[in-house]
Image 1 (spheres, rainbow, N blue to C red):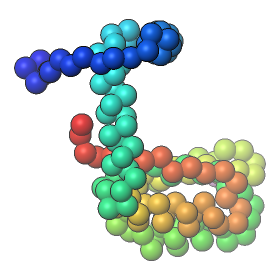
Image 2: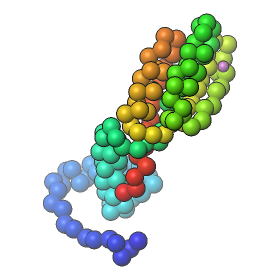
Image 3: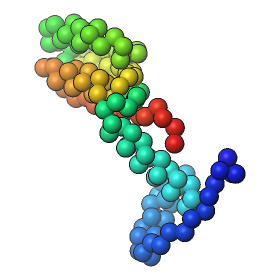
Image 4: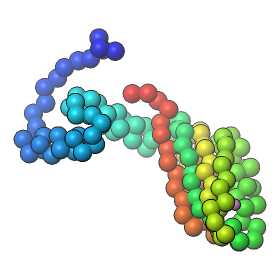
Length: 139
Ligand code: NI
């Protein structure tokens, strides 16, 4: 809300400001300096939240795995059954003849979610994978 806004003055090298404005322009969506700086501050605060292992997070684990490797999908399911409280939902896509893609929506304590991702992505036959987390705290 506008009434919550405070103004403050920042001293910044000219060149840094010029590069910053160029970046904002490249992003295209916001050319308003204030809005861009607010976004960056929020981004940094969220990063800080996520670095706390006790933080509550939501996110997704996306992975591509070998469809032909015997027992692999059962193994992936077993790990998820051991993490019932973190697994929210899953989408499976049969990518091509030999590859499956799965995206698992996860939520819970950051440490537990990372543990689940490490276990899944470490299984033999999982070719690529990534956990993406966002904080649930608003800034
Ligand atoms: Ni499949």
